[in-house]
Image 1 (cartoon, rainbow, N blue to C red):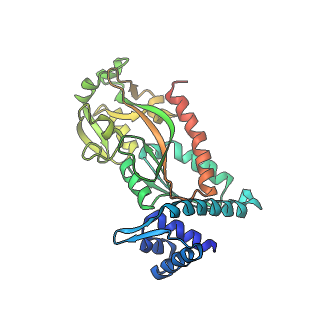
Image 2: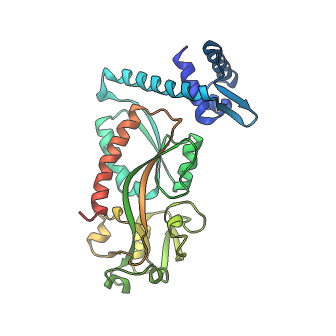
Image 3: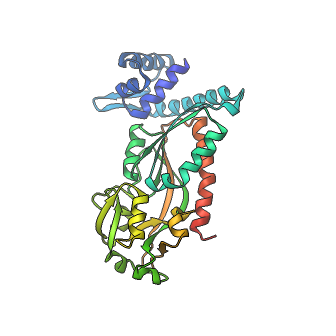
Length: 305
């Protein structure tokens, strides 16, 4: 039994496919198939059921795969024991756009300052797309809004912090004079949306608001700065989670006023998702550690402390 075999074992389980495992491991499909077959012969048991739809672990295979993950995690830790200050490795992270505005840049700054040799690859997408990326193996971990659509086999979800959506309106808007506003009233105003919100169910505010109606979308932008500029000019209003108010220049200057919604709870939970078939590396552990620290600050802002 070799570490390479255990690695390929996990890769096949990760993608439920020998061909995809071979593609991501940069070796041939016959080489992966041969490695798994030799391991099965050595153990005297079948680890995968091969079907036209893919390769799926047997009940014994599930147990062996979990042990293999533990072994490779331990090996990775051993490699880093000699010099933990020189942590190296890669991590692919999928994040919702709002996390890329404030929290994640701080996470990357602290992580790179402590471990300059780590390589973090970010994918910015909506929650549903990130879920799909996790399931396909394109992302190692994802940071999403935990709505009812975020579910699936072999998916591990962990709450990071709770928050709520607020109305952002110009200081000159009639809404700015109110302590709170009903959702019905807010939905009657021209609205600026992020990207393709409300055109398809991609999670986030689209999923949360679907039971209550849709806003009157007059603009769509893929840039939060542009959205806030339009809001500050009184052209439209928008929804923003409370944690994005951290050190926001538009709110600090009073150009934009954040307004709570009085009659409907638009509460959200920001969470971390990963596949249970994914081996957790030391780089991932350090990233999550830094992430949770930054999320504590976001939670404090959201709770008004």
